[in-house]
Length: 86
Image (cartoon, rainbow, N blue to C red; front, side, top):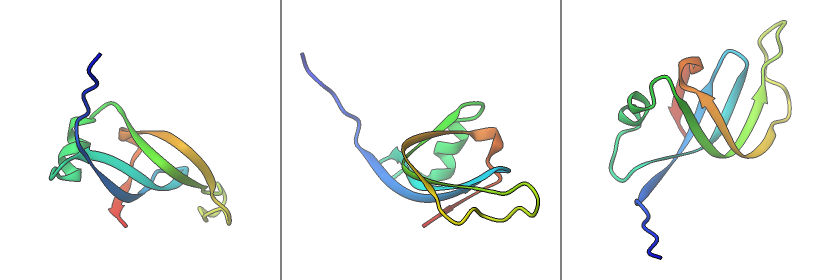
């Protein structure tokens, strides 16, 4: 059996949603733009690997002091308020 892999770029990002800030890695096409990848994921979930999740408190929208580490999280693209390169 032949295994075929599509080469990917590993992009370090910080994502803000209404309930959390997630820092981790997004796997995009080689030499592709993050914005193009996000557009292709419309109405889907964005996988983020090696993620650290900081939950926001409801009262004053502050970041929780310590992050929760996860091997992978799936972020609803429609819930993303901001995404930036790290």
